[in-house]
Image 1: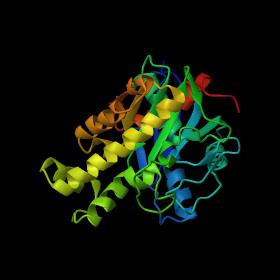
Image 2: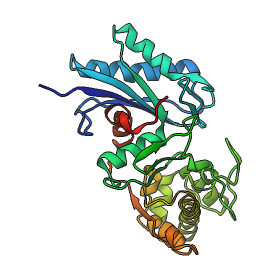
Image 3: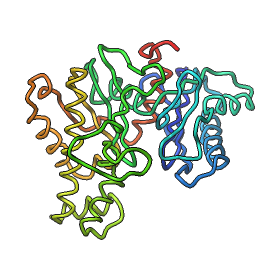
Length: 314
């Protein structure tokens, strides 16, 4: 008999994905589906994309038992009311994503619990469950990609805060750096060190490429501007992690996301920056690459259902 499955949804700045996730933290083969989101997308297009991936995941379930739906969404969110305002998707502000997904389920005659959390919370739960943070109870999970997000597990329990936005390290300010003043503050970590903002800084220094893949290739080829750009990002991320560790006494930080894979040297710069801190309890934090594949955010959304006992009550 097949164990009950979670329907996982990951909503981000460029795409929304869905999949079915087992109680062992595995994505069911051929159940993963994707549709576009983006800064220019209308609310109607965003709704259509979410509907598409949820319905396709339901079709993939093909009568198997579902125990709930987990949604990891780019922040900020309002976890009590189920509202989302993803920073890089400006046409959704205080959008009731949880109720919308419930309505899609109801159209299929399904009444399932729907859990909404910030995507950083979901990815941290995935790392703690089946990734790089197994057996570690004071953890920050991070995503360095189109944006920068994070989540926290402290003392073995997920910390969401009253609104659901605890751990949003992308909007911690980093001293000594200035990025782009787009959808936040120019001195926030995301404005300095996300993939697009790192590329933008490199272009201001004369780099001709237009995306993170080109920057990574130029770094590997020894381009001095590309190397300076990624080293700058590594130092900024390291400073932010050091500050978070000084506040929370973290043991481990696991970083995933497309831009985190630009070069393994990024982690060397991050760890070298932390090693300069004057407190030993800060220097002890380990910063490692995610132990998950690109399925990590979906596994995390599944964890919102399968490991709900770690979450605070609503």
